Amino acid sequence: MMEERPFNDTSYEQFLKESKIMGSKCKKCGALALPPRAICVSCLGTEMEWIQFKGMGKLVAFTSITVAPPYMAKEGFGRNNPYSVGVVELEEGVKAVARIIGVDAKKPELIHVGTPLKAEFLEKGEGSGKQIFLAFKP
Amino acid sequence: MVGGGLTKLGLFKDRNSKDFFTEAFVEMAGSIDKGFDPKEIDAVYVGNYSNDFFVNQSHWGPIIADLLGHVPKPVTRTEAACASSALAFREGVLAIASGLYDIVLVGGFEQMSKRTTEEVAEGLAMAASPYEVAAGFTFPGVFATMATAYFAKYGVDREILFNVTIKSHHNAPLNRKAQFPMSIRDFMNSRIEKLRKKGEPIPDWKDEKDFLRDPIVNPPVAWPMHLFDCCPISDGAACLLLVAEEIAKNFTDDPIYLAGMGQGSSYSFHAKKDLTSYEATKYAAKEAYEMSGLTPKDIQFSEVHDCFSIAEIVHIEDLGFFKPGEGWIGVAEGLTRLDGSIPINTSGGLKTKGHPVGATGVAQLYEVWVQLRNKAGKRQVPKSNLRIGAAHNFGGTGGTCTFTILERR
Image 1: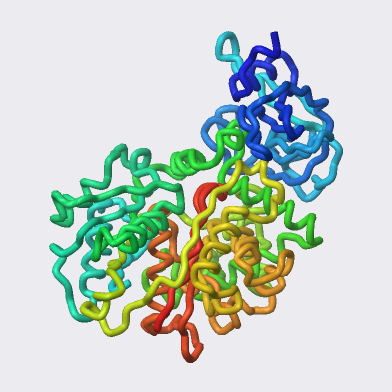
Image 2: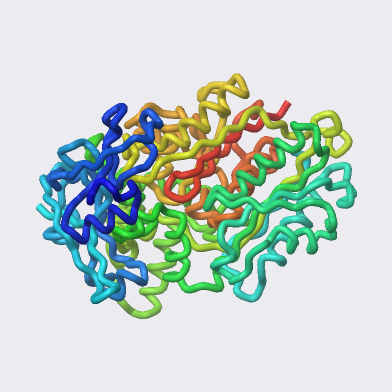
């Protein structure tokens, strides 16, 4: 049961594997959090319920990375193959950091803040090492 | 504050952290006008971010106590990413203010050159939030992202950053301890000289900004952050001797006093309400201004944590030197230059002086101390009655920020 999962990063990642973007909603003040939090940072309440985010939002900030960390370089990213990441503000009002796909990372001048985006679930690795990452695309 | 020391910053693969701290300590001891006996140091506080990762050695406190002959008296290591030694300074101040100690050594150090650039980048990213790293962010990437938010909010572009870089590099050749003591014009001339020797065509750069626009010499790291927007990887150490106010004159006739200090914390980048401001900086500044009874207008010069060019613009707004959205205008108008109304990073800043992360907080305070004592030589702030200076230190992606105001009486 969804309700029995703790409001933490592990549950957030489990939900991503089920293609769901799940955050917490404070029962006391209604504040939303993504990833979920056990303690509300608005009213410090500890009674939470799950909320599923629709995955629709807009780009509020981004970059195109040419000097990649080792774990991204392994995937073939780097000087000649940059990738984009950014901050997305969801319709529900919370923000998330994520990969931005479906844009030309080689031409960051053509990527615009304000662009409408929708969520996509990216798979990395295989078998038991398989992980799902949240990404957004126009 | 009665004494200070700072190593020459740079990459020194044949020396280690103990060598760096020794160099800073020896300079500090020699800087105390009336001399002092190191045996009188009650306690030592040292900041270090991640020598654990950079040189595979933890538990640095006792290594420093051993080095200085301080054993068996207490030593404490502080860690707050790039703000590690600002916290060492703060702990030292609190220990004296509490009445527990009278004489405290505070310092910081980092040894980064043993690792490859990629490894250092990975080590630094450990100080970002786990969410940012999982999404593929690098350190430059976080600040680059903030830059795009700033550009979109205020209708500006990458060109505003060039003024920060040119200004910082203007101060660098005036600081003999700087890692890159070169102006942008010096870089241009050196590049032209290299190309001439190779017999290759010389680019037609009209001025410094034109040079910075050239992706061959200034390639992107994380757009819009390019090479010349980013501080270097550095080795180095810094330390200061703090003593109780009542005994300061036993050490020097010209001590520098703490007027106010503050420290703040922050949420992860994505959970920030405003991507173009740091609440940790604002909180630290509010505390420091309240403690000192001073306002931003009273600050005559300041070191700010310019790990990336856009960071300097955001910080000078958060600290109240400029209104939100107007920091870049102040920089463009030359107000933050050495001869401007509010000189920023007279040392050349992290960008040119260097950024051995654990040493930086105290290294910034060292610069303020040198300036207030009128001993900064060619980079001395040209103001008569220089009395109030400040330093802003910033850890990780803004998770820990400090602001410290120093005063000459």
